[in-house]
Length: 118
Length: 107
Image (cartoon, chains in turn brown, red):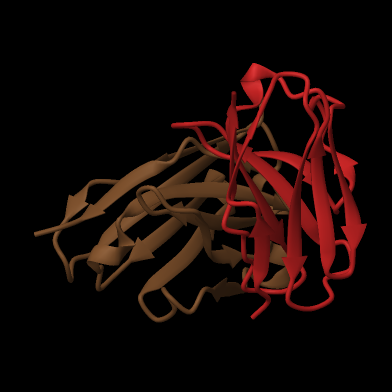
């Protein structure tokens, strides 16, 4: 079964840092672009960034709302992707989803909750 | 950035009805348009990719059409389990953006 499992979400203070992980199984992780999508409480979906595959040099691209604060990385040997979140703001509070990109976002994790609050 | 305008924001339907949601892109995205369903408390699920292709395992009562800037998503013979929020999303170029969502309820 093709699956993504996120972890690492928790309560963090404004200005703090957090690293989320996404573990993939059931498919050749290294063959795919991967992305992060978030959803603030009661709000819609927001794409926050993607990382390309090795053939495309693992190039990353970000939404303006997180550029310069968030960093996406991956370790294909571990079938894992990461989201390093720095300088966290209250408005970063959301469920964070790891997604596989196959053109469309065809596989989603269950999400991990990040709460930024003092 | 490409903006996606989705309407309506909510709709109410009876079991067996046909409902249609529209999504308009702020510029030509050819057919780089997907539709997702998100049930309460769950992760989104891909229903339609490339504007009109049904994802494997998705019931045939779901369909999509369109190209360029104007797209529609239709559910024929609405079922109780279709209660959810539906989102369009383009992937023409980054940043990928989603529509605002359409919340479907059953009368």
